Image 1 (cartoon, rainbow, N blue to C red):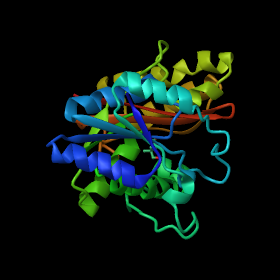
Image 2: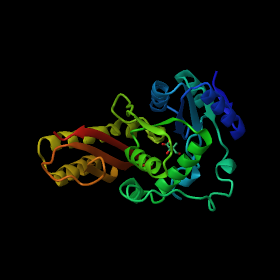
Image 3: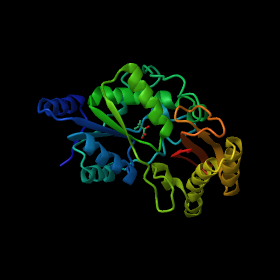
Image 4: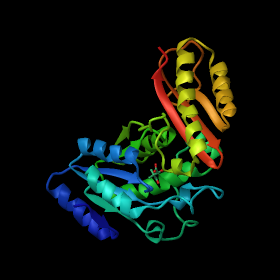
Length: 283
Ligand code: PAF
């Protein structure tokens, strides 16, 4: 039976007890409103650890002033039963006053330079500072051996890996594969904001990512590939923030160069902002 914990001393007691038994602790941080993508992360965590803690905390510091913090969907009962079914042992539910005891304005912030400032970081200033600030606090609270994050947030994963390396958290970071709906739309809590018409159009994002991969492999210049993806999205009614091809370190690869690539898209459809990515080898 999953145990819901709202008191840090109880969480610490549980984790300490498990560690005394020689068990490895896995951690899956979330903002709730969980779906199959999150549950796949819990299942993946089980392959790397003996006991799993998941957290649900809608983190105010990673939302911009005009973003969806207040309307972000909160579904605690469904989340708890879903986590239990996925094999989670403990659900950590910190209150906002506990997470930020000095208040959000006076909270000590964690900033990871470089990778935090491009793409998502450029369109959502301060977003990754909020993510790193809360994830470092969650790591200190849970003290896991391994933490699992979804690859759908490709840049978030890169930022967290850099934070963990730089601040020397003794935590292994594991990435979970993107889980998609039948039409290719990457699962996200924000998908429920989409109207039925928008949901049908949303398949364009994955189609654009696949087209970017295929065009690069066929030798099309990167600038052309990015322009074509932008046009495909605009024709379908999206307003893209970016549709770009990058190397895994976010540098801009030269045309004709082989190796690992990632196609990244962020685009608005109506009031909903969707992000997705596709990793591939350029050959
Ligand atoms: O990926 C998310 O859901 C959030 O950014 C995270 C890692 C739980 C931090 O609030």
